[in-house]
Amino acid sequence: MGTVLVPIPDRDFDPTEVAVSWRVLTDNGHGVVFATESGAPGAADDIMVTGRGLDVWSGLPVLGAIPVIGLALRANSDGRSAYRNMLTSNEFQHPIAWAEATLDGIDALLLPGGHRARGMRSYIDSGILHRLVVDAFSGGIVVAAICHGVLLAARSVDPDTGRSVLHGHQTTGLTWAMERLAWRLTRVTRFWDRNYYRTYTEQPGQADGYMSVQAEVTRALADPTDFRDVVRGSPDWRRKTSGMARDTATDPRPAFVVDDGRYVSARWPGDTHTFATVLSRKLN
Image (tube, rainbow, N blue to C red; front, side, top):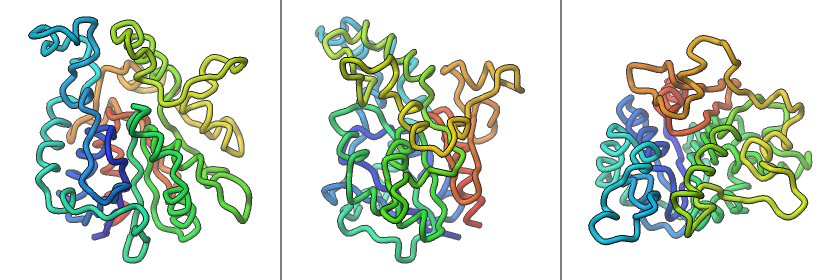
């Protein structure tokens, strides 16, 4: 059995990507060590937990507690259940601070995601975490990244090479098709916060999607084809790309996970059971 270090931001991480991964790993006998920026227990993006805040009536009394759009985008019942259980666990209640985190006694580094800019930017842009990721890749331990966690890895530059640690690896991550669909939907329904679903947005003169996860990760790779997505017409490709179907502990068909040896990646919360299971098996 192994020990997995899971750095998360103080707030706004994705509840499914963190909690389902925690449950799969601990259920399989692995240890989990959480690390937050402050060293205090973190909190997920509440919208992704409750679904409230994505409808045009979200600010109204009574009606605001009734989600519609949020029901499709929030964590499903399995993810919410895992999150509730994780909140009371000893390891989640007693994290270490990023600045105190080391890889001593650690067998794998898991980088979960989230998209809300207010909490996620400090995580993705953290020099402390960048150095930790570089050390993990150079030290040969297993690294697993999902969604915006892949962007954190892409921004981690090895000082010896001047290149991202993902240079030379095959990876997936939140695809622009998925990110754009959720962004276009929520910028209309959450009109007072139009970029809620974009962690980074384009500057004047930049092409549409230039600051998407897929585009930025691809720029860090040795070859653009090293960013992998579901091949159109492949088995279950509609299920995998709909943005509606999520995998379960017993049904991996909706998931898409790239296994590149000691580096594992996935796209979004709907891949998490399969993603964490692949990581778990590497530690057995």
